[in-house]
Structures are given as structure tokens and as C-alpha cells.
Length: 427
Image (cartoon, rainbow, N blue to C red; front, side, top):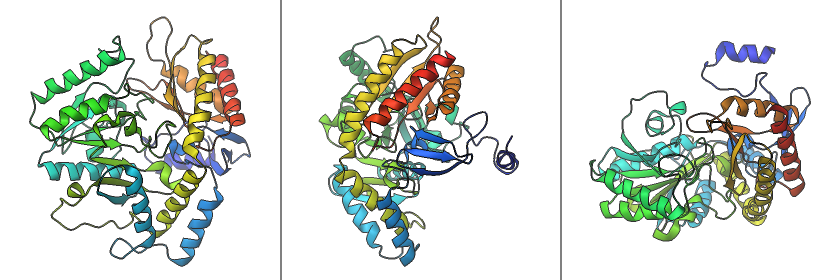
């Protein structure tokens, strides 16, 4: 055990998860690579949990942060804040939500917490619909709507939550159906549920479930849900904390794969927009955002430094078409990983979109989730110089792959080759 690991264990909570039997101290990064305290270099395919969205040490972001810090670091929302207004204008325009208002927070958890506050206040209901296998953050209210027991440490909640089918395409009671039949069955389930409960305030859903193992429904499911929800006045909140900003390649937002019934009433965002700086937020129609009848502020949400970082990062992403790069390079990476998977019986499925890819590992004889195999592959990949993540619903048996969106073809090929060797070495 290293001295730093011993010190960590002595002063931090036991439930604060660390990867690897010998935890890693990352000291610096550049581009798509990071280095540890021993000088080892790694290709980073997880980006600090999908947060280093463009690149490590991106000069444009570093310069923006440094220059703003040299002027003023903090003022609070009690004062006009030019970078916050400028970033809000851009996010509102990009969101696709008409007459949009933007509220900045410091994390995705806080963004989802705010969206729940707005929905319940607007609808005068504490009933929430959420998806099975979902994850929405670690606050008391966010945990209360998380449909993944591995990340929900208490059943107590200020909200009453009902869970809906549809977030996981290849498991569960409707997995055997074709896409159209799957959507129809999930819609029928939603209609039946709404007939048994008091009218909910909102449905909150990740277009691609992140912690749940990068699972997703067929395109159009949430559009079909939205038509049913609209009949009852129920709001739709798209949790875009992991899917936003072009990561899925085909769309800028995950909800756009379900756009037939229009945009969501609210969307939440965080992670990638700050490229490592702590930014989250909610976009909502003005009538919803403005429904609160008491004062509120955000001491740290919308801070000048984080807003400067977000502006520089978003500008870089758009000017360099990183969404297009995610589509092209991500498509190649998925093809390479599926070719690998065809030779490894323990790989049940390679799924995903753009640079948001899940590799699900199972016990071949039974199809049961295989978290031990996932942990072993995680370790083997690290030894080969590749950092990846883990996730999954009933068990943590999915390898999560989400590199910075500036990933090159050569780096995608290198990462796929390393993962091939890691899988074959332990399975």
C-alpha cells in the first residue's frame, strides 16, 4: 500500500470508490493521455468519468481559466456576470428548447436536483417517474429516483418514484421483442402505470444510461412516451449529463434520437462542458424555470472562472466539429471492438454510439453478469497502458469506454488493440 493510499483510507469515507487493487495517482495529462506518479503513461478512454470532453490540458481552456482567474475568481449570482450570460445564451440556443432559460450549478447531481425542484413546484406533485437501471446523482433527492440499487444507499426520499420499463434494450421482459414491439410494450406499460398512480410531475430519463452500462432504448421511445405524458401534463426531463455536447456522434443531445414529439421540457447538463471544471446546469422553458415563488441564488454556480472555461471549451468543440469526430472515430472503434468480441465468448454485447461505448461481460454458460471478469479486464488494460471504466445494472460487468472527443484514428486503433490483449489475457 502506498503512503498516499494509506492516508486516503485514514481520512476519507470507506464508500468513496477507487479503481484498481493498487490505486492510481494521476499527476498530469495532455491530449488523450495521462501520467501517473511513477511516470507511466496511459491512453485515457474514460476522461475522468466522461468529463475531460475535448482533451487534457487543452490550451484554449487553460488560457481562458488563467486569464479570468487573473481578473476575478468569484462574485456569486448576486452580481451581473458577463461570462455566465454569454454561456447561457449559447446553451439556450443549442438546447432546442423554445424560450429557454438556463440555471448553472456546480455538478450534474445538483442540476438534476434543481430540475426535480422545478418540476415538482410547477406541477404541485412530488410523484416522479424514472427509468429502471438509471442513475441521476448522489444527493438525497437524486438517490431517491435512481433505479440502480448499487448506487442508491437509502430507500428514504422526499419524492415518490415509480420506475418505467425501456432503458435497457437487451434484458428484461421485453428484450425478445423487435424494436417496434419493444416500444409499443413500454408505452403500454407507461399507460398502465399512469392509470394506477396520482399524476406525476415528470419523467426523468437518460437517453443513454451512463452508470447503468451505456444501455439505451430504440430510437423514438421517449418521443412515444412524451405523447402519453403530454396527455397527462407530465413533464419530460432529459438527463444529458453524460450524453450531451455531441458525445453520441449522431446528435448533439441524446434526446434528439427521440425528437419526433419535440424537445424535452427540461434538460440537465454537466461533466464535459467544463472539460474538468465544475459546471452543471438546467435548461427549461421560461414558464417552468420561473415558477418558483421564493428567492434563490447560487454561490458557486456560474462562477466567472468556470464560465470562462465552458465558453472556451464549447467554442473549441464546435469549431473543430468534435461531434463529427465522435461519429467517425467512434464508429471505427465500435467496429474494431465488435470484431474483438466475436472472438471472445465472455463478451455478450458491444453497444453504444459515438464515443460512448459499453462492452458487457458475462459467464458464457449462463449469460449471467460477470463483474469479476470486468474487474480483471480493467486491471489488465491498465497494465497495458489503457484506462477504462466500469458500470452496469444488476452487477458491474460492463466496460465503459468514453475517450475525449478529439480521439484520433490511431489512438482508437491502439486502444482497441490493448483491450483485445486485455480481454484475451484474463478470459
